[in-house]
Image (cartoon, rainbow, N blue to C red):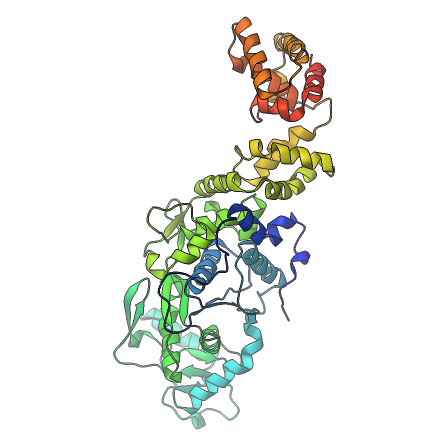
Length: 511
């Protein structure tokens, strides 16, 4: 049986990425209400709200699925209801344990908690079959003995005649005794033929379909296994789901599912079909647009609160607010704020938003998140004093970085061993003239008794004025000598973080 693996079984990644969404949230919003608070000032539903997120474990948790999960979670939290998780693992050939793990841990990383243990659809096949037989007994379904060859011929004929390809109801009114003894059969729903079905969708508005376009679809296959259409309806009913919030690619399914719900005499849910996410060019979202799994963005150094905020604003809005905390999202979210048009995924906007959350994050949290990346790059563990230095540098480092990886990269100069290996661009800056200049800078800095931002800045400005040079002409070769690269925090910050002794030694190495 496929089950979600515990977090510690997840592939080796920085622990803070997969196990501390609440810690990260607390660091950002220490004064905010709890993420899980279900008390709001908004009017409550008269009956308990129950939503569900029901992914198929045939791949990663993609961006669209993550947003759907968020919208279900937020709607339930806003209305003081329940948010449930169902793993639709009936496709045994494609469902994998790896995919289940990726979905569970992706949701956990986003900080989405669920009110009950996940339900695995594959465990409920007997219940699904039971409902199909109930419909058969009530006359709302019938046995179809059509063979696969007959159905294939039917579809070819319809295709040749340019007719819609749908089941023609050949066993709808026939007596099962007409079939050969012991012949296998599927159970099909007997749908309405006349009139139309209208759904008052909470996002799309009124949507109607002629009943003649809804064929008598299979609920139970000839081998006794339930179809997706049957399983979804039964599970949603048994879980008490009141609001179906899902992608609008399921809108056509809703008419078939509603026919089954009405045949069983069950209470109809509220439908809310949200538009899909497109790429920034307006085309259907694909990998070239950034349609990756949630875990890929985690591995790219995106913070969970940044991803949460970004996905929230894809298709939903609250006035002109762009930066929205989780507590605010719970307070403000409702389906009425979801637009009808597809939203566009923009990786650059995500990175910019992530930069905001990086600057707002607690320094200790960023240290925890960046250390694994630093140690991987250095191929050595950081000592307690190294971590303390990183903590000291964090206010400077995080002001420039847009993600954890860039943050980690920008800190590497702190831990490099002398003599530094200079990259190609840095080495090109250290010609004879630059080394002569470094000699003068070294002497002037060596004479400083107080090593502060103010004194180092005054000293370098004096040297630049004396040489009739811009400060940048001094800073670039200094940066190359002190960090081994041409990119770093401000040169005065570098001097203070490295300290007088290390700074002077690094300069001396290049003179």
